[in-house]
Length: 207
Image 1 (cartoon, rainbow, N blue to C red):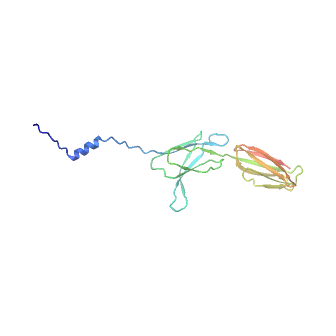
Image 2: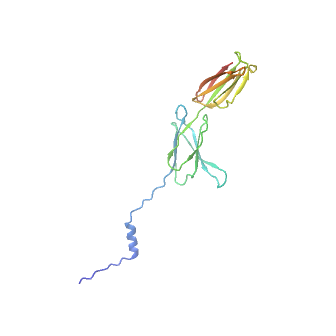
Image 3: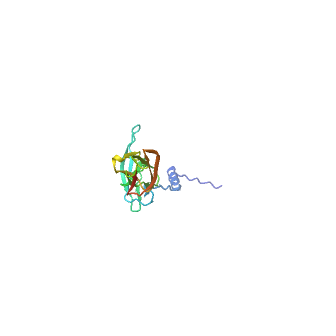
């Protein structure tokens, strides 16, 4: 009768063989945090070059006020694009993105979500409306207002002569203006004015 042979394998060798038999686990490279996007102008969709994108980190303490500290800024290229990668661990968890360029109104800042994502901004361009009131008809006093910045109501009369008012407001859009003759409150005049961005539009009221 043939005897069966039993081979003894040391535990250390068994452990080594088990490790070698396991599939290799590939460690994923850390993904960078990315800030990218494009800035264009409202009303024209033209790119806004040399605009700044300010990045601020949340430095608030638990139970305290919200505090954000500026840690970097980017600039848009000739086509309005901006792009930057931050190595893993260099980017803070909560970031506020605020674009700015002189001649444009500052938009509401955005919270950054820590995945590669494009943030596009449309900036409202500044324009100026010059209202000139000329008392050369029959009215003695008028009050004018409109849907542009600072137009809460302005009263002027014949005793003031010709007057000029300058308003800074959003451009590339229509603005409404209305005026009332105090001698005849039922006499209300209205008009619509298109304001070109980065320019001054003059509107004259004769009364």
